[in-house]
Amino acid sequence: MAEDDCIFCKIVAGELPSHPIYEDEHTIGFLDISPWVSGHSLVIPRRHSRNLWEVEGEDLAHTAAAAKAVATTMRDRIGAEGVNLLNSCEAAAWQTVFHFHIHVIPRFSGDPLRLPGHPGEADQDALAELAAKLRA
Ligand code: 5GP
Ligand code: ZN
Picture 1 (tube, rainbow, N blue to C red):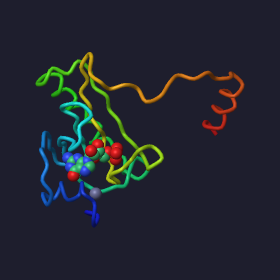
Picture 2 (picture 1 turned 180 degrees about the horizontal axis):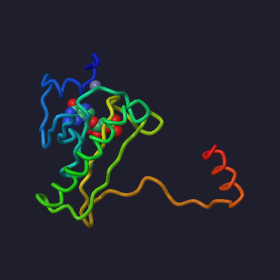
Picture 3 (picture 1 turned 90 degrees about the horizontal axis):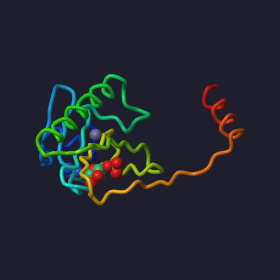
């Protein structure tokens, strides 16, 4: 079901314009309106879900497969030398549009994108304690 006031549901329904680049039964892909680099695209399930924590498993699988297809097209048609896939889940992780989506970002040597994080140092005991907590 489409969610009221969800801009991506409106794009799925054709009620808002987009520049589509991919579609199948379960997903669509279109160019991001504010690209980080030329070709930056979004792939979304047609069915609304808020984010990674809420997306149903089959929609997640379909969207991942569509992201791979789009990534391959970027290599073959616009000469991408690499690709980043990005998903942000909730505002704390930079999510701004609350309809699950995967960014497909073509990469080119010398493009301006940089990793947002920096490698830190980790204490082995702290890593072991954390791993135990996450395994539990
Ligand atoms: P998020 O910040 O949630 O990970 O990603 C949302 C993305 O949607 C942003 O990169 C933003 O530029 C893009 N976006 C927001 N509104 C629109 C729109 O109306 N059309 C398109 N094509 N992209 C949008
Ligand atoms: Zn939606």
